[in-house]
Length: 217
Image (cartoon, rainbow, N blue to C red; front, side, top):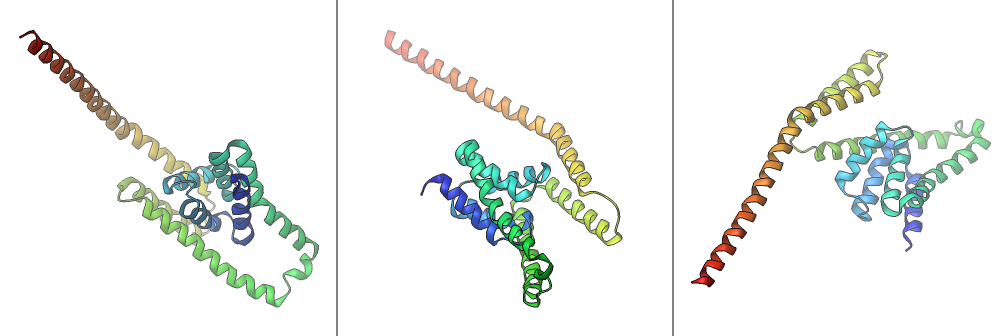
């Protein structure tokens, strides 16, 4: 199948059958793009999620744009984005025609109550997958725990506090940690590489000299 058509159909399916917004879609996007299609890796998905959440626009659309761009450049990004947006647009357009009676239907209201539970499960699945990918690194675990407790406290106490501030604070802590510890590790790795290269060159020169000395004898 043509990659552009595959991108469109894959993200159209995600946009058509995924309820609950971008966070619920992340789990489905990962299942399709990482597990089935192998378009991106788990680390890529983690990075995409963070970047998509930190940039303007819905998370799912940003994820689709990134995956499409990585597969086929700008045209791939456009096709993937259209795929994930088009089904929702058509459905909302049709619902808008009969919106007054749509939510009053008992069958539809009952279906949406069940969908809400499924959406909660999908979002929880995303959270568990991301927690597993953190590994045993202390800083991400600490930031995740503190952020979760902060958001729970804000919701319980109904405080007026934006989650964006928490994200910026975590980003600042990560940047400071890199400036303190990351650069030291980079310097150590650079020193090790320089030593290995120098040692290898010296060994080669010594071997060459020894060979030339043997030939002269």
